[in-house]
Length: 160
Image (cartoon, rainbow, N blue to C red):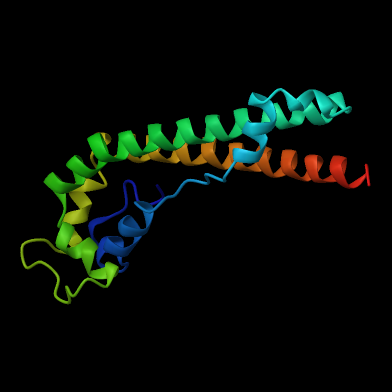
């Protein structure tokens, strides 16, 4: 986002292709939860005497569902809006150079100075702002999940 409204010459000094390429990479944390789900669906969760631990196990599953939903929203925004925008306005060949897929020469139809137009387009700024928002939402979910996992671990270790 810090490249928005930069001068034309500044785009020739940095590798915008690699920055955009990296920004398109994201993943989802989707752990196996079959044990917790089996515990709940079998009715055996009632055997866990600690009500706080039970609540945290339910919250864990909900947190994973929330994070997965956020991932799907980000993926949908990227695939239906951001990628089509980039496809119309920049060289995808230049992005793919950084993917180790055998492309070793940048496009002759697009150069670094062409990014000036893209980074001065409100549509581009809005699309990346949306991507940034989903990244922040996902990171916040992952932080909550980390805290919750540590709490569950502490609750189970204290029972030994």
